[in-house]
Length: 291
Image (cartoon, rainbow, N blue to C red; front, side):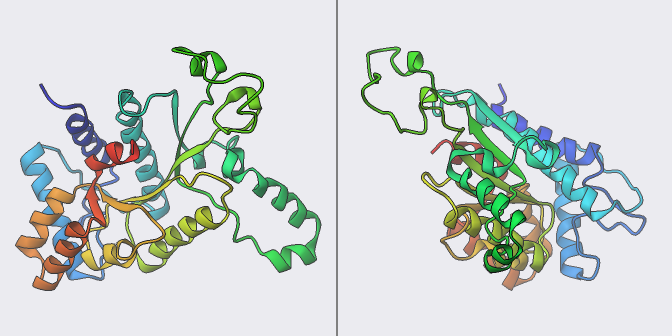
């Protein structure tokens, strides 16, 4: 019997091909490759060849899709992968989980979560006061691609096995619904189809904003990408203090591809990222979020 996450990984790749998020142009260049980099083109093509060979996926040849469209599609498919896996880990992380792409859900913003509700007030103040806006800027505003949160807990659920809370205690804890708070943000997922240098820094900026602007519990902060070049992966993955970890859509295939068509430096760098636990496969993400 196929494991749940193994099947979800296969389906994730299948959807990337079906939606033309991963496709070839008329010159045989893969959509996640940098057309100005021979190394990027070779590694990206080898990863696709491995997926086609081993998983029997079919890749389409089509006209180049707008980069912004590819990015949005990758966000949606990342959200679908998490929706098909993380809520199933009830024995590890019980709860009524919600996984949303913020870009497609205008009703929900980062300030709708307990740790960041004060940002809405700051936004209102700066909107009304130009001098204050000039002084504060808008660096406190954060907009994750995909978020994970769960419903707050009713007292009946908390007390299901024994009386744990009452009206006399636990009056300010965030997780208790009767306290009237907002949902707690569990994870912020930055989904980047490719990682040109500027996009890598955007992910780091988002992470640092989430860290320094929170009140209370820090959510998981992760990056999911399909970038083929180890050097660009390293531009964000190396170092600690901002993101928890970076997750590649096909790390096993990438490792093999870099060994076969990449340079020795690229292979060594990728090995450093993997052994240093700064780069993992997409299949590792659901369990890591259960920590």
